[in-house]
Amino acid sequence: MSSTPDDTGDQTRRSVFADMVRLVGASLGFAFLMAGPAWLVAETKGLIGLSVSALLCTIPGCLIVAFKGLVGESQATLVLVAGGIRMFFVLLGALGAKFAVTGYGLKEFFIWLALFYLFTLAVETTALLAAAEKLKTERQAD
Image (cartoon, rainbow, N blue to C red; front, side):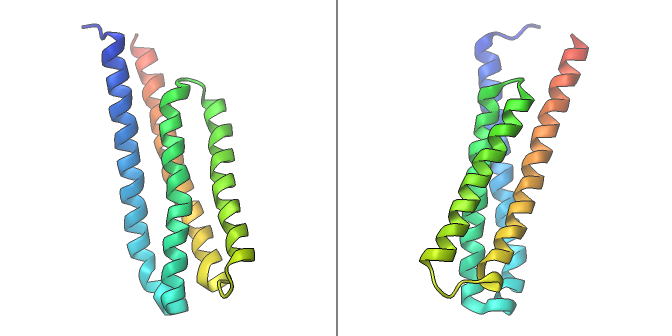
């Protein structure tokens, strides 16, 4: 049974959407897991810092997963663009927090940003490696 290009595009959109849902769900789960420690360490400021960190790391993660559907087979391009997008968002947010918002230091914001950065990086990398493995398996089957 052969698939038409329309079928392939629809499968790609579903795959990208499923990866985004997984990333957002994992980020929400991680945020709920970290909410207790954030409250214990910095109370309300810790929860605000955790929430902002979640947004700063999840939004570029979703952009990267969406971009994955556009680049197709070029894993090198994807890795380069993913790193650039992620670093742009996170560094811009960190600089904004450092210079524009007073009272948010290491325990209120930056530790949660670092943890979320590493967490979303791991989730995105897992999704990208799974997609690369799937593509490799499909090629070998043909």
